[in-house]
Image (cartoon, rainbow, N blue to C red; front, side, top):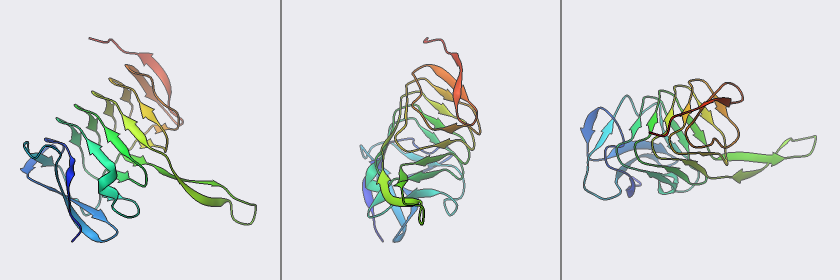
Length: 174
């Protein structure tokens, strides 16, 4: 089994405490361990439906801070880096994608693959069934409403919703 031992922060998966996180990758199931080797990971749900995906060693391109919650059925496409700050909550079924295609010729529109990093700032809450597209940065303290499709970066301390995600309101900073 392919094992990456330094990619997930302490307390990253709410629920039952574990000292590793099973994820699905090209080589099957791998185990991820806390970045600092100290805290515990917590998992919620069945990891056969969710996980970290991408070419090569995708788990090595994921960084999750402390005190985070990754709920059931989340998918992290780590073709490029995904950086999730501290105190972040991901609702059920959140998809964070880093892989897209260049526009191809008319005979095959999905051209060459392009990987673009995604950053999720400290304190962010991403609601259930949200899709975050490649190259997006979600600022600290933001809220992304359930079901949104985030195709552009989101400012700090704002709430966005919809398809595509649009500003709903600015949030207090305290």
